[in-house]
Image 1 (cartoon, rainbow, N blue to C red):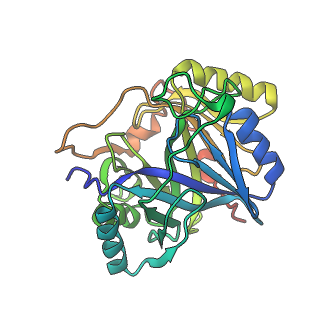
Image 2: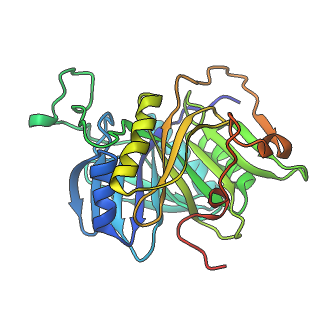
Length: 316
């Protein structure tokens, strides 16, 4: 089935950090994001072409990881339909006030326990002064600082049961599955889902520790492969830990660089190129163990920490 389109897009994500000052410096100086207010232990940050006020809500916490992932509904009626569907699963937690610039949000969890929210009401970002762009169809002036990430691209969760989470997103929220990793045993070790024409907005990969509710990575989109190369050079200059890349993924074919921000949360810089899914009868592309053993698209083997590192950390 094609996406239902009751969910318009992945919106803003809360990221937890036990090193708030260092993490904030990473997001502003390295990623080139713009501060847009604060509340309590949280700082709100935005990518330069995000039409809403917030892209990342960076919150001081005892340990790193992901807080609430927010999705915007396509209409007020779509919001009510998805809330009713969520409530029927027993995973709903109820209505709460949204972050500054956002209306009421219905809070729920996926089967793995990741906290999520869905809302419709929002204020569009209104840049002032030097943040006003030359082109009025652009949300904000290009910052020209650090990587200068354009927008959030996707989130990859670690999950105890990727299939259970995938089915929740498909059956309850109206997503479509685009690609999967299918082991020789028949178990699905990773699944990629989308609400839009993007190849994927949300991913679940098997958490080998058997721990629920953890984060694998958050990904930001940049305009070109050259931006990924520049991001690697900037990481080297600024002492940012490069985990793997630059290289090209086999699954979804994006050009990538993975780094760790100071608290240990994995961040991907991603050039998804122009690969979009238009077919309403798209069938999930399944990748076998043997195919995945070949490594990434041009032969780079997947680094071991990619299968073991997640946040919050787990003592083994």
